[in-house]
Amino acid sequence: MDWPLPDFRYAQYVVQHDGVRHRSPCVAGSSTRVIYPAHMVFEQGMTPGEVADQLSLPLASVYGALAFYLDNREEVEAEEAGREVWAEQYRLELERSRPTASA
Image (tube, rainbow, N blue to C red; front, side, top):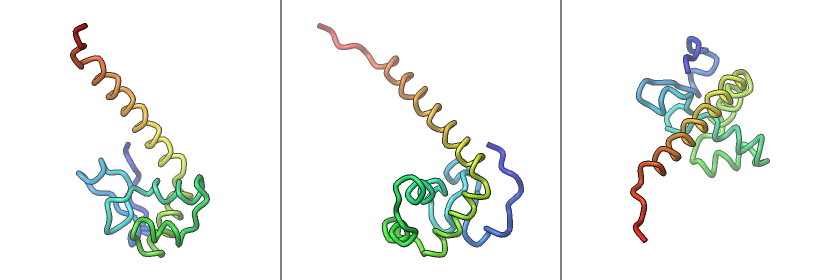
């Protein structure tokens, strides 16, 4: 996915680099994609503090990732949906390429 130019409001907390998680937005100083803490808070009902503890991230970084996610929700979710489609296609391809067991 082509992301817009970096938003400097999040530069301290969210990074994107070639070769790191396929340029997915990640929490700075980690390889944790922004979508992980967002889903943990918004879908699983965890508190940002619980997420910080579980992922071994500074609390401010979790809040920064959540702010980035909320401001870029459509793009982040679209990228995740694309990853899921790719993963399913890859899984099916692997299944098709496996040799079948002889009876």
